[in-house]
Image (cartoon, rainbow, N blue to C red; front, side, top):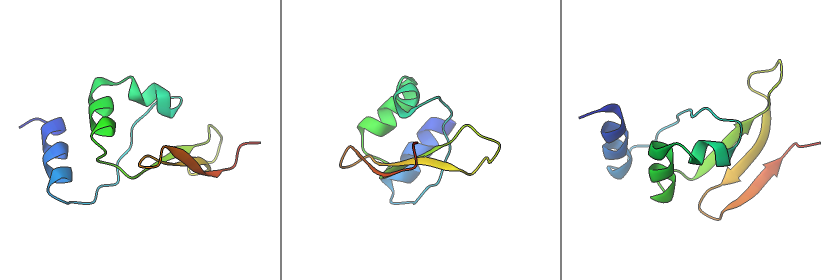
Length: 76
């Protein structure tokens, strides 16, 4: 079983996972064939978009993937 299949198996088994995916935006991440499949199958509830800044943990947006909307934004 490869890494992708292992993650899918864990998610389908009810395991909670915190993971990272790299891209310039959520739309950019969705272009990745593996992430697109995971997102289309509603394996994740939230996406946290980090700011491109000197603070690696600065949150730009929190996106509710189930309701398809931004639930927190610090854009400005």
